Amino acid sequence: MSVLIAQQVTQRYADQTVLSGVCLNLGRGAHVGLIGPNGAGKTTLLNVLAGAVRADEGDVHVVGRATLGYLTQTSGLHSTLTLYEELRSTFKPLLALERQMKRLEPQLSTGGGALLQRYDGLRYAFETGGGYSYDSRIHAVLKGLQFSTEQAQQPLDQLSGGQAARAALAKLLLQQPDVLLLDEPTNHLDLEALAWLEEYLQRWKGAYIISSHDRLLLDRLVDSIWALEQGRLDTFTGNYTAYVAQHEEALRHRWEAYYEQQATIRKSEDFIRRNHYDKKTAAQAQARRRALEKIEPVERPVKERELAFEIAFPRACGRRVLRLQGVDIGYPSANGERDDALFHVEHAVINRGQRVALIGPNGSGKTSLLKTLIGQIPPLAGKVEWGHAVAYAYFSQIGWDCERERTLVEVLSEEPGWTISKARSLLGQFLFSGEEAFKKLEQLSGGERSRVALAHLAQLGGNVLLLDEPTNHLDIPARETLERVLLAYPGTVLMVSHDRFFVQKLATHIWEIRDQALHVYAGDYRFYRRRQDDLVSEAVRPTVERKAAEETKGKLSPGKLLRLRQRQRAKLEREEADIASKIQELDQTLAGVETGLEQAGYDQNLDKIQQLHGDYERLKHLQETLYTRWEQVAQQLEAV
Image (cartoon, rainbow, N blue to C red):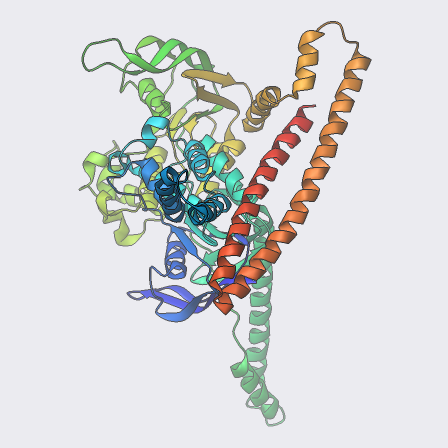
């Protein structure tokens, strides 16, 4: 059953057609990834679907009483309320019931049966509507999106832009609309918050459309891909990896169809040219001409422009590139009191040719470490030692904020030996052609600023690259190009990134900032994840096994320990099967309640709607409880 339908949607801006006859059908519970190059019109399409913009042509229909929730890239909550108060306001109907109950409670001891009956009705509606769980849901979302207890009590207008954006996401998730429209929801999320959101959306029973450049997220969350390119929307079944294979195959067929038609046209034109003067064959030539005029032309596939560059590499440096010994990273105290370090590095080394990914929560000090390495801020303690003949180049998240009036050509032609002509040629490799080279920095979009910063990085070159979020604002084709460039680059890389696919493809080593210390992993991202899973498994090892291991350490034979594990595993497998059966039954019951709610809505039967809505909320709460326990059992099984 559909919840959102669009028919022949066309949208133009000035003389540019952004959407051209777009048709789509979003099914109930469908999980869709919306992709396309920067500027393809993804945000425009979401604006039209959400009703924020009316299309020039075509129609959008929200089926029945389905509710839509829309997270824009620039959305952020602004209010004098605290973050917790704002999220709590999501549950206004429950709060109203709660206030009514509290007003009646002092009268219950002296009131009659009618008062008790009214109170019981309120309490039942409050309980079945999730009144005893809404507070825990708020705290779960706050924790998952990396808000501290102190931040939850801050007024919204005191939060940073990134925090306000995460607050908007938190409120949207708590509202639980039937359809989520998410435009780059992973912006401002660190790896831990991203993993939490991914897990949360995996359990989401409603429909959603996610516009994202995060390929790993698209692989794990969506069951279909909508690819927007040159105003046209194409649909592919499966996740992002499945889309790549299907898209390549579809493109191959389009080229084959185009070349086949071109060959047919050339053959017919040659026949006409040779035979239209000959009386014996003139009729055939005329028939061929009429047939040609009726041919529906196959459009030549247009390949989007892609970045094409390499990073200058002057010379190799010594084997040891960088060593940190007893280093405290942070900022000196303004009032002269004791400095508070963001984190401590006991010992860390980077050798030539390694690609190190620096990861950690937002605010943990990743950018501060890079600034310490290039000398912008001094270490609070310890030694930072660069190796022999190191020449580093630094890619900054912020780049040129104080030079907004300068043009792209001015920025790139100031380097020694670089003329305006040479700078324009370099800009062309980064998709800035013609007069675009004379744009001012303040006129650039986020993606364009990232491309200019990459151009400057390629221009400077070096044998060590320090990259602070190089994929920010880049679309998927640009990220893939950057990956190829860095894989071919012969030097050393230290990079900060929240793009797990990017890190997984490039990193040979992982540095993680956790608990105010730097932890070094001598392996790639998969190795790091395995180590993290081992820590989680250890934390959730079944109590029986852990207790037995502690009490009988050194006493149990391997055979007895094996039998103990087998018994524990059998018990967990029985529980897992039982939970799976209950979830299946519950899904069927929920489907029946949803059907009843739809019918009651059509009949405008308010009493039935209220009753079924209470049943629905109670069943959903039970479902969440079962899923939580199911995941715990699965983790325990893996540990055994």
